[in-house]
Amino acid sequence: MTGEMLTACITSHASHFAMDPRRDLAALDGLPLGSYTLRLRDVVPLNWVEQAKFDLYLEDTAGRSSLTPVFSGLYSAGRPSAYIAGWIDGVYYDQTRFPPGTGDEALDLTAAGLDGPLMVSLGKLVPAGGRMWLAYEVFAGEGEVHRATRRALALGIPLIATPAGYLLYRAGCWCGLRDWYIPEGWREGPRKLQGNKPVDDAHARRRAVETVATLRTFLTCPPGGDPDIVTAARARAEQVIEGLRPWAS
Image 1 (cartoon, one colour):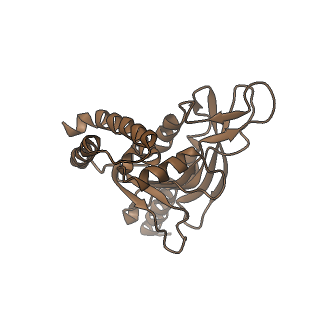
Image 2 (cartoon, rainbow, N blue to C red; image 1 turned 90 degrees about the horizontal axis):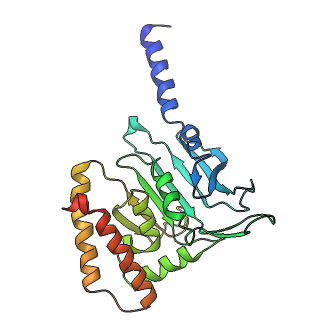
Image 3 (tube, helix red, strand yellow; image 1 turned 30 degrees about the horizontal axis):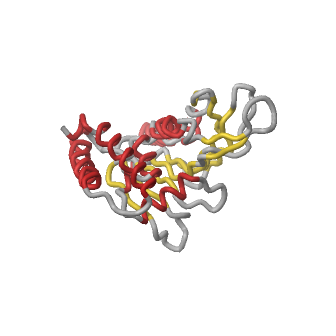
C-alpha cells in the first residue's frame, strides 16, 4: 500500500468515526432528568453512515422504565466533508406511563418541568449551524404540547412563542424558525417546526435582534382568540426576550 493510499484509508476511517451517530447518542444514556434517568434504546443505523433512529425513555428511582418513549427521532452526526451540519428530527411526547408499582404510574413531563432539560440535553448534540425539527402533529401518543402548538399557530402567534417553538429555543435552535405545515407527499412525516442553531456570534446577534423585535410587536398587539393560549404565549415570549438579551442588546 502506498503512502497516499494509507493516508486516504486513515482519513476515511477517521471521517466515518467522527460521524458515528451511535457514539454521540450514547452520551444521552444515563443522564439525570430531574429525579429520573434518561435511557437510550432502539438505536438503528440508517443507510447514511452518519444517521440513526433512536428512542429515549425514562427510568424512575425504583428502576422502572417508562412504557413509552419521551422522544423518538432521527439523528445525524453531520457530514463535514460535504459541509452538512448535524441535526435532529423527532417527536417529543409530554405524557408517559410506568408499570404498576411504587410511585406514580402517569407522568406529565411538561407539568414536572422535565421538557426544558430534555431539550437542552438533545440540543447539545446539534452543532453550530445545525438544525432541529419538532413535530406538532403526531399520529399516535399525541399530547397537549402538540394540540396547543396547533392552536397557537392558528392564532398567528410567533413560532418561537408556541409550545413546540419554545422547546426549540430551549434546545438552542431558535434561529430562523420555519413551519413545515405542508410536508411534500408526507415523505418528511407529520407537520413540524424547524429551528436552527446560530452559525457564530455575529449570526446570533443578528437573529436575536430580529426575534426580539418580532416578540415585542406580538406583546404590544397580541392576536384575539383563546385567552389561555395567548397568555401562555406571552409568558414564553417574555422568557425568550430575557434569554436573548445578551445577544440583542
